[in-house]
Image 1 (cartoon, rainbow, N blue to C red):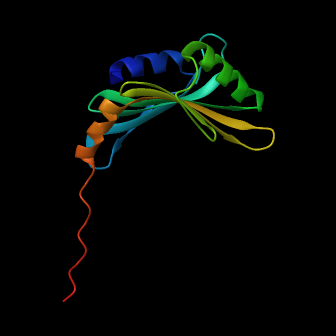
Image 2 (cartoon, helix red, strand yellow; image 1 turned 90 degrees about the vertical axis):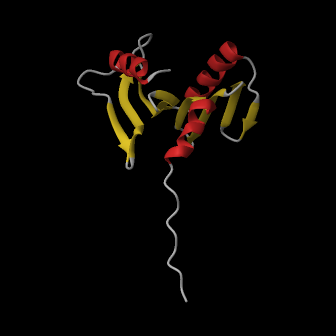
Length: 143
């Protein structure tokens, strides 16, 4: 998704008085992370929406929420209904893959609470970040 489309949708969902904030990578403006607290338009549930942007395209979009243990089961059931069975399951993670794109459901928590994240990833865009990673600093040569 182009950054402009993400920003338009994020601003439309933002909670009152919340502003979409973005921070660029230290050595280039071609890579940035953005985020804002939003409300789900369907049920007004509050959650955090973030995106990693590379060269004007989103590589990762994340929805993060917290709640009781039942929240995980609700998200699992909803995603399984919409996407089918996950293609990969690991401890506290399910993943659905379609070519270079994948959707990941992660959860962590304690006895009676959970933090849940749903992440949309595009590997084609993510792979572009390699050109912006600064080379490692060489260590001084000792005689």
